[in-house]
Length: 435
View 1 (tube, rainbow, N blue to C red):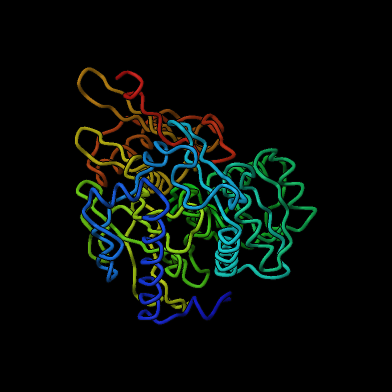
View 2 (cartoon, rainbow, N blue to C red):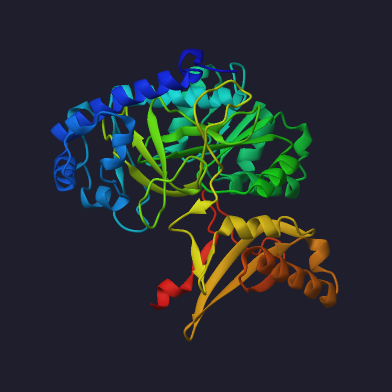
């Protein structure tokens, strides 16, 4: 189902015409109201009047997460605080949190884009949304909540945690749509098995899963274990929250990014050069309708590529390929670039391996070492040592063949690796602790 046919199926020329008009308005507004942008534009030798085409966007400077921290808490707001009706913030685990403010119109825009996203994932009036994203400063819970209500679904505001109660509510309330992180959906499936719950007797049909990169093999694992269609959703607090882009249930092949509200670019993360459509690099997003905290060329650090070929669902907005990782999560092991999702795709193709793993990076002398710790199922763990050794050797060889990096492999018994009710902790980089 297409929620807003007028905008979701706009011809390409109309999308770009609307983008240019909204970009020009946004650039003028931030130049007039945000000292940070006025100063950065002047340093770049550009004024709002210089933006005459979409190609001129490349002339504008980037905005970094650090810029948000440097202007903490309200320095990048483009409206007075009395016009802000909602404030969200990141967890701030690596420094000061990034703070975002929403005007009443921003909340309306967010609600509308999440309604589009919910409908694209196959949700509609009559569905029962089991919302296990966190409520609070994190944007996930409330974003999904408002959009589902706009479509007419019944929302269960579960938030995260209390997994046994989550499963009870799913059974008793007849949940049909699940929203949470991909890793937590697998944790729910595992917990259901432990509780003796027959997943196939649940009414779940769709999972709208995001907030962390996940591989196609992990999708297959989730769909098999929960008996659902697993749909990838993308968003980030700085840009809006969930609902920036989503897969359609018809194709599950790239996430439609709502181009009437955002302009996506793909850049070389090292040089900042804009790459041609289809090439993989770092996603940069410019907001063109936000009032509270508009962002110009925000570097997301997420690695993907743009897809502009028509989609079978009929939506005309460009798609972004499912994220392969983040440029700041990329590990460099003896000169080789490694993303956790690449190793995940290897692990999930090995029979007997469970969907729970961690990458431990150490520095021994002047050399970096990578250890892959992965759970195996009960039957495999009870096999003879020779069989376990064969599995370790296969994993090590497959990773070497695919990525060109040598690693240690440690097979661990089920439930050894800590579970998370939010984003899974995939990497423990001890090099940072010792440096």
